[in-house]
Image (cartoon, rainbow, N blue to C red):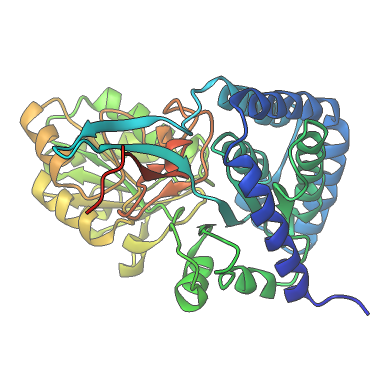
Length: 419
């Protein structure tokens, strides 16, 4: 008799738990060897990965995936090289496991220390982007964690081959089977089962949109680090360099609109809106961006769509931008703290005081002055890759690299002391 989906997941959980005990004390040399050989293997099997991805893309087109989602799903030789390079960069980073965060002597002679240790077994549920399979597995291996991967059904063929290459290469290097496993099922119930695997998963990281977030809030009993949703804003201040602002806004919206650090709302100070918006909107529309504006912005540029109230809370992940005209930096801060998702926010201004006010008052994981929100990325921040962008405040916030995939424990050295 075939095993049920729940039984298969429990079996995978047991293997992951066993592998995590090995990884907790694995040497840096072994982990780096596995990462470097996996990078080589991904490049060597590039044609097979692209072929599997082509199947996913064809199915996605038939299922009506949007162009933005298909762009997130697509792999090519360049993106495979980027995945491999990401693993090499992770291998080059310092190993966080065993790092001593402090050591002190108590009056009774006890020496108390605190060190970094792996979390254990990490589960990740993610959508669309198959490069996450390599990034997540690489980070977890380097941080001494086993990982259970549950990608979206739209990327199942791509994820299968990537996960298989990583798992086999790690095994060939001496890392136990079970360290990297893919939940190979199109059944959405698999994600729900993962949310309740308290005996096997130490933490669950969901990486996706509103639907996934809602499912996690409804079903998860495993500890969760919420990541992903990015309703990001760029505020152009009255004292902005408008040439600089135009380049930043265009990049934040157009360079890759399907990712969570792309800008979804443009806030513009009323004092420069009449000068700035006509040129800015013309450039954006020339790149295919649909503009939805407030009444004040439509008085300046009438031929844009009226924004609805729900637009201020929307993560489009597409070539759509909402625009609102405001009177002050305080109004921008209030709007962002009311409608933002705590991901990435930016101010464009040459006024130091207003920049400082914005940077300190905006409640987000990453706050920028005179730069695009598109830089919120583990690789750009020097982490090699990331497990996602945490938008919550406990344990981790912002891009989750190696250190965020560890916890700590106290070590105490004594010489016969009793209490």
